[in-house]
Length: 180
Figure (tube, rainbow, N blue to C red):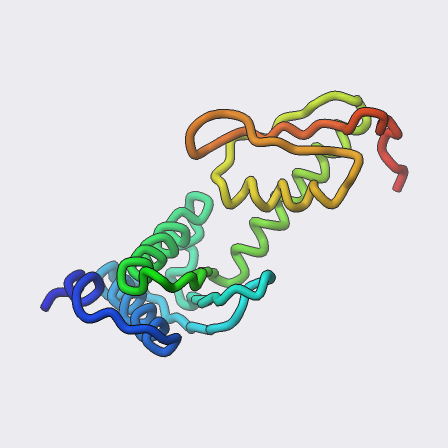
């Protein structure tokens, strides 16, 4: 039986130990077939909203390969593992989060810093400013961050997967930027 038939075939079982075993064999197979010099650690728990989550942390000399091109390899592995879980456990709603040496937190902070800068410009000039086209997970980070400030609003603009974000001041909130 081949690697993919093990992942996509066989009997469907419920339970977190079975989920973790499937995630472990899937990630192990990806690393083996890809020839990566990486090890990984799997943790089960809950996300910020209390939803079940499996976190996979990669370690090793090929960490930089995963982070290249804005973390596309991390996202690809994460998507693949999610799809394998959805196929084998269709009723389970466990989220999968993959990280490599704090990369996810670092990129989230960079997006928040840029959103803060653009929010300041929008408030100063009293005009809309636009954020470059982003994938859904990055837009979510920005929208959630900006939702905490009642002086501005944000909206995704465009068609397709990648959309721009419009950041604009709320009418009657022309206070300008606070001095720091």
